[in-house]
Image 1 (cartoon, rainbow, N blue to C red):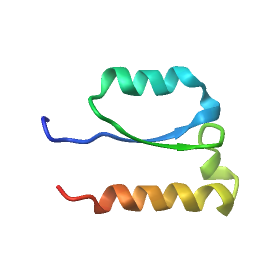
Image 2 (spheres, helix red, strand yellow):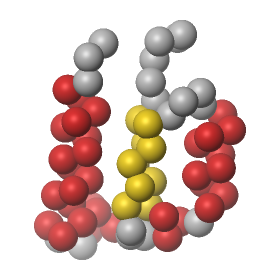
Image 3 (cartoon, rainbow, N blue to C red):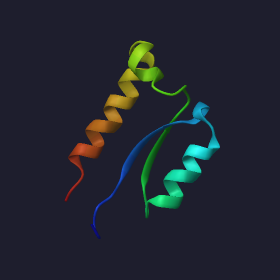
Image 4 (tube, helix red, strand yellow):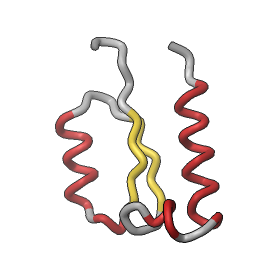
Length: 64
């Protein structure tokens, strides 16, 4: 869709290739970068979970 904004949670310890892939296949993606491993926010407690969940809330509140 023309006005759709893709949103990504990017764990920078996954490697640069994933960030390049998001930018290659999606026009103007909203990428939120976090200093963690892939899916670490799911299993490593509030230190990682809270900022990611806050970013997801921000994605959901964006105007359509």
